[in-house]
Image (cartoon, rainbow, N blue to C red; front, side, top):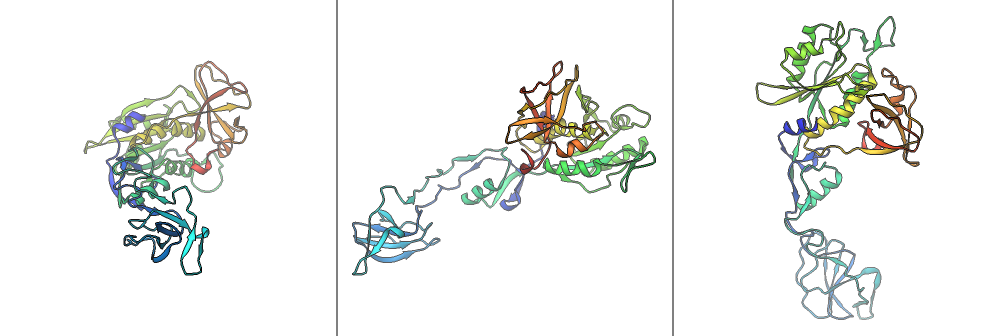
Length: 391
């Protein structure tokens, strides 16, 4: 999935620095000047030349270019961030200075230098942040401090959702053989957390006919880089996703995965008349299975589309036993206790259940032919959560 996303990575765009938060650098961030660009005082005090006591001959404020300091035993008052005058030999902290009876100042300079030298943080042309780095407030501030007005970044992929199933309700409580659509609100929220921009348009439920499925996917593809569908990934009497993909000329990249829950997940690729690849992610209709598909297939695909590195999986220590699933990989919902550094399996984890999902942080990976024993350290697939929501 990641390699497929990388091959179809979205063309970079140039955006104002303040609009680039959350996107991905498409080129290396290098210094446009030395940092700092000129010597600056790191404290409030006096820039001095020669020996004490010093005669104060002026003032330097931040944002101004001072005249040289040429006279022996002279000083200028200077604010933090102010440009050090040429000829200055030291900076005396204001709190360590005192006035003499004849109007001069005196004090003892510290052995440590109280100003920042040009290039102290970075030299001209030095690599600060490589391409592929997520843009966060730290990167934004660094770019601005270097003098960047715009950044070249990969844009957010556009994603659309189409929900299949005549049995679904979009309002009110379930009953009379119909269930409430949980994925209609759930999946878009997760896609936003994965860095997507949601394309406008109807979500569903889409009528359970082949013609309706084809029309729904085709309309979504017209305005999206990724179309997620829910339900219809099997081959039941009203499962029309596979025939719809055939009619659209889609190429399977993944068609079922040996994992429980979520095994009937799929991703297909459609190449448009413009030559661009677009993707269809078939999420199973059961909520937990849909989340498995998002976390294991869609997240790496989107990382490639966004020009980012493949997300690295961490590990967790199991606090309780977790059963295996025979020849299948078991992705077991867990709650991670950050203080204890352990993960506990959730209750209410049937494929159609959401109660366990609502309190979970991700999935512990139990490889085929094994079971998870207490104390074992196993791979961990996090749910697509906001940074503050992760343990």
